[in-house]
View (cartoon, one colour):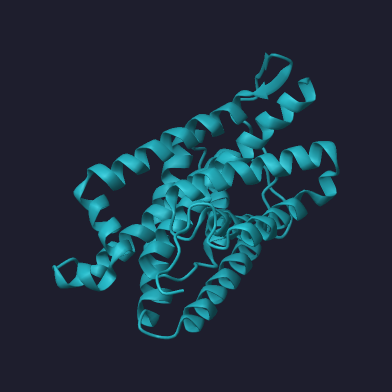
Length: 289
């Protein structure tokens, strides 16, 4: 029982990170109707910016996290303006190729600046808490707590503010929003800023727990896509629940079967769920099909 509870806790921690990253990806997909394949590498860049601010400039953990989120939000707006906006009226394959270009630039840029070797951020909260036989570090508890706060704040922003309603309107009907005077380009830039800012916060939260490597964003990006598809394209609740499901699958599968195959469980779940419900857990059927 203690092992089960321990793996459930670890799964919720992982799922919290995946949910934050997938939420940002879902927002961007809702606006552009194309997947941002550079999302995972922007997540990776957020972790390295945090590492740079702490190691070089001596920032504390929280100032570094906030500064990295702001920097990545600005970079996200730049990526949207340069790599995606000029291709908005072009076939989706063009945006896909552009995203791959951004992905390669980011990964090789990090290697050039910090080298291919792994990096670590000192853990600001290393103390251990034990409850019901579960060993929990304060940093892992912090990841779960911040994830919950971010999810709640994002939902309040989307549902209760004018800017959030504007983003939702564009996601639901892009041309209709344009006809009523909404500036699509500004909404797209804002959405990218929020999306990449969220990914950066998630990366900074887990940076003291895991080793930073230039390719760390690739697997996280792939899992974010799995979550978005599992939950249903464009569904925020689906991204949250899908993230938790994926985290639990990895933790339980890794703990009881083999940690070497934990990533297999993610894609196995994708195949199984889509075989039963092709639109994902919260996806809607398209009329006429």
